[in-house]
Image (tube, rainbow, N blue to C red; front, side):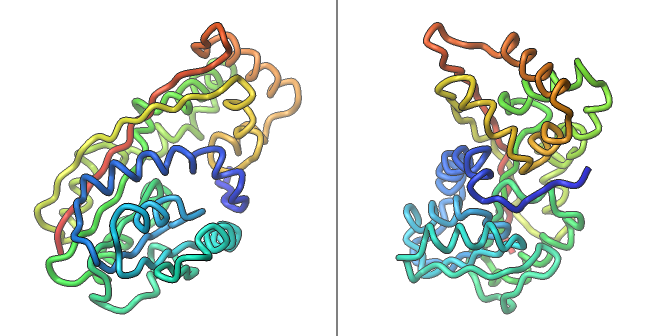
Length: 262
C-alpha cells in the first residue's frame, strides 16, 4: 500500500497540529543564530516553517515539498511573510545552490525518503561550511501513543496490518540509526535528543476522524478496510483508548531529533 500525501488539511488534523508543538522544542534544541538563512525539507503544510518564522528571527526560509497540495496550503498559510518561499522538490534533489543556507532542517519526513543518505548529503551540500543540518522523526516503535494504540488494535484484528506499521517499516527512527546516518553523510558533532509532547484529543471523534482521511500510513490502512472491518477497528479503539469521564483522550508522543555540523 502506497502512502498518500495529497490533502494538506487532512494532514494538518492528523499530525500537523502535533508537529507544531514538537517543532518548537526542536528549534530551541538546535539553538541556531538569529538572522540565519534556513531550508525546510519536506515542509508539508508549513508547520515547521511557521515555527522558524515565529521563533528564530530568520533572514529567509525556503520550504521544499514534493506535494503540490501541501505546497498550496503552506503558501496560503504563510502568504503574509515575505521571508518565506516554497519550491517543489524532493530529498534526492534539493533545488537550492551549494552553501546557500546556514541551517537545513526536516520535520517528520526523513523516514519517508527512499534514499535517506542521498537526502542528508543534499542538505549538507546546501549548507555553508560550519552550518547545521538537523531533523526530527516520530519514535514510531515506542512512544507515539496515538499511532501505537491504532496499530496495536489493527494488528490484534488483522496480523498482516503490521506490514504497514511505521514502527516496523522505519527502523531508522531511533537515536543510534539516526546518528549513524548523519555521520555517514560526513556531518560532524552529531548528537540526538528526545522531544516529548502531550497530544490531547477532545473526544473520540477528534481522535478517530483523522484516520478516515487516507493521508499517511495509518489513515491509508484504515481507508483500505471495508465497512465491517473499519467498524471493528473503531470499536476496539473505543474499548482500549484511555478516556477520561468527560470523554477526553490524553496521550503522549515522542520524537527523536538529530543534528550535525557541516
